[in-house]
Length: 403
Image (cartoon, rainbow, N blue to C red):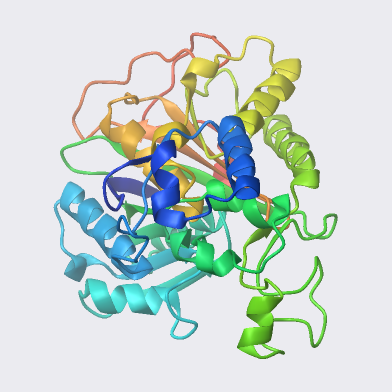
C-alpha cells in the first residue's frame, strides 16, 4: 500500500482590523502627489479592497513575523485537536524573517514550543509555502514522522513604510509591491492518516518547478540591479550606502509580468498533458495570484484549451485578505475549507505562481471522508463533466511515483 499524507487541521492569523484602501496611507505613509497616483493605479488593477498589517494606526510594528506564524500554527493545532508536543516536524516558509540568523523555522519553533522536532525553513517568495508542504508530506510518506505542521507567514509591512522609500527614486518598480503586499500567516497539519472524525484532504502530489534558467530576476531586494554582482549587494557595502541605493526596497520588474501568466498556463497545461490533472475530475482550484488582471489572463489562456472551464469553482480571497505572499495559499485554503466549499470525493488543485525568478508550485488534493462515513457523491469537475471520484482511490495514477 502506498504511503500517504493528509491535511487534517487548518489555521490562519491576520493581524489587526482590516484596512481598506483609504486607510493604507495612515499605516504606510506616501501621500505625495506622485506616490498617490501610483497607489491609485496599482490598487485599481489588483482589485484588493482590504488587507491586514501588523502595524498600528501610526505605522509602528505590533508583532513579529514569527508571532504571526505561531498564531496560525496554534489555530491549526486547535482545529486538529492536538498540541505542539505532538509535532515531529515543522516546515516554515517566508520571504524575510525577523532576523538574519537564526533561521525562521528555528525562531518559530522556539516561540511555539513543543518537544524535539525536525525544523525546515523554506525561504523564497510565494511558492515556498508549497515547497514546505512538499517536504513535510515527503517525510510523512517515508514514515519518518507521524505528524508535521507547515506554515507560510509574511510581514512585509515594516519594509513598505515611507521611511524605507525616502530618497528612493519613485519609479513603478520601487512602489508597485508597496501597494500589493500585506501581512498574515496560514498553517496546516500533515499526518500519515486521515482525521478520525472529520473530513481530511489527502495530498495526491506536489510539483514545484523553477524556470530561472530561462528568465532574469523579476522581484528583488538586497542588490543594485537585476543581477547579483560582486561588490554590489547589501552585504558588500555600508548599510547607509545600501539604504541610499534603495537596496532594501522590494522591487518588481512589472514589464515581464505578462510572461509569468503565459509561463504559468504552460505549466498547468503540461500537468494536464501528463495526466497529473484530469479536468473531468477536478472540482476546485484554489489559486494564488497577485492581481485580478493575472486571474483574467489565466482564465483567458486556459479557456483556449478548455472552453467549458467553470471559473466559479476557482477560489481566491485576494480582494478581502490581500496578497500575503507565502501565506496566501494556506490562508485561502483555510477559508475555503472552513466555509464548507469541499465535499468528500471532490478534488482540489492548489496553484501558486512566483515571479521572483519565475517558479510555479502545484498540489493536488482529494477530500476524504472520515473512516466509516458513506461513500462519496459524484462530482462534476471544473470542466462541467459529471463523474464519480472515490475518496479511497487516488484521482490521478501518476502521484504514486511520489511528490
